[in-house]
Image (cartoon, rainbow, N blue to C red; front, side, top):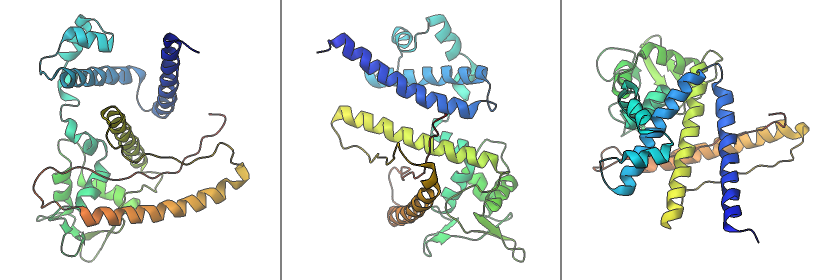
Length: 288
């Protein structure tokens, strides 16, 4: 029977293997898009910020113990002070509650358009047709109300939505119609669209994992988190499997949207949250 030390090493090995798997796939995606130096800078800042949050929650105090911060991060106090006092620490993610919107501007615009007045017609239960510019509400005012403090123009977002098939512009009236309520980039030129859609899915899945870990310790009910896969799919059957699962996921997406629309209401007082489910098909080739 293994002793406690062996059990701890086994647990660490499992965690290390899982983290390595995630990091390897994320870094494979990031190579050529962000330098290692910048990734290290970003990781260091975010890690220290999250360690601060962890200590505040654990100690129930606003004042941070630098000793505890050093233990959690493995950094000496001089390095910690240098990072904490740097401009990036107080500005890069200072508006954390806007982070997802800033990371995924196109999906954020569609989200507001399909849920909030005056861009959404609550009586008719559908997004309004919007003039490109001019008096409020317009597509320009929709972008202004959704995306703040970024060098993103309404014209560039409209071009991305239109090229993906999510919107259509009526040449006679000059109004924009949302014809697809889920933003799905289709055009090869919409490179950033594919990136933001993918990172949104990753971010949402990590939120679920974090919630479920906390719920496990607290003895509370966990959020639904499941997967269905096989390790032995013949390549000859891949196309048929893709087709059948694509049909299943499209139907599930429609059913999920119907449920969410029945419960969403921006007029109810009190806090509101972002809620939803993620659906995607995946394959992992043996050589990778």
